[in-house]
Image (cartoon, rainbow, N blue to C red):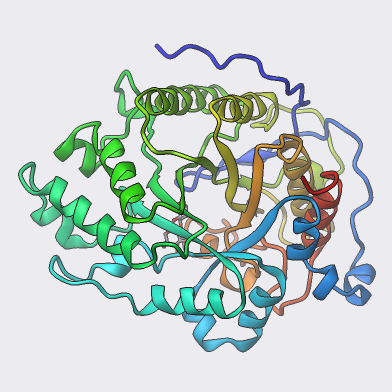
Length: 399
Ligand code: XIL
């Protein structure tokens, strides 16, 4: 059994946020644990400038942070207002899907880099950094992969893919998510590793193989392990954090080339915050996550918040506090994690509600569109935008 995470410097109070893994949304039943500052009103939202020096990218940079978002390539090509929004706000971008196996590998023999190249060109022409996502995952793989991969050819398939993809963009990437979501405690292994196609065919050394191959293919990119479900102050969250940190410790001890950990941060707004707050049982965010971040820092690794969004499934569609509760979740989560200097980047998973992936996942029970991001479907800054910007501003001076 993995040792418990040692207590770090963090003494964070528990925050009233529900946390949702992307497979199953937790209902947000939480309460306000600390006083909330006023969020921007809709009147502020209309008049205040949010571009140029007022943008998230500029505010983040002033506090030693990179801000950016995941980019939907279909929207980037078709929606000029969306492209302008990304350009105005982001200093770093990541492809929401275009660099996954499912997009790059139409066939076992071939690669299709059209969308990935388009993202790199967009980023470079706008002087943005680029995160690569991802080289190894159990999801979004092409159908042919599981059909043709065998114990005999899996290593070669993996190595060729990483050499080709990371090699193509070598020297131009800020970071690569080399392995995504390798831990799943429910799969029952003592080491917590997920029973993925790569584990079955290669064994646990697929992780080391992937990182070593990525380092050789692109020595300049920061190599990242990216994971979800490590945010919640629940037993499941703690078990997952323990399994992840044990895996990271084994990797560092074996000198696996690893530079950073991505905390995906798909969280949920708490219904009771929208309702004014009351005390009830909750999935919460707090000291456990901060101990995890401290442990990652003590391993000499950076931390990136890689995929933040705040689903609003637990909130009444027409309740007055819906956008305010989402903003509160952003503010409290970011104020907490940005308290650790190891956190160097914040990316949201999308930027406008118009293109959120959540509408295509579980969605709201009432069938209405989710509002989990920083700009509304018409491209107007929401209270969440101002909450994020203020959380960046509180971070202290750039280091
Ligand atoms: C999601 C995309 O947003 C969707 O468009 C796609 O259908 C599935 O993948 N964790 C990750 C991301 O690491 O790659 C996922 O992105 C969201 C959860």
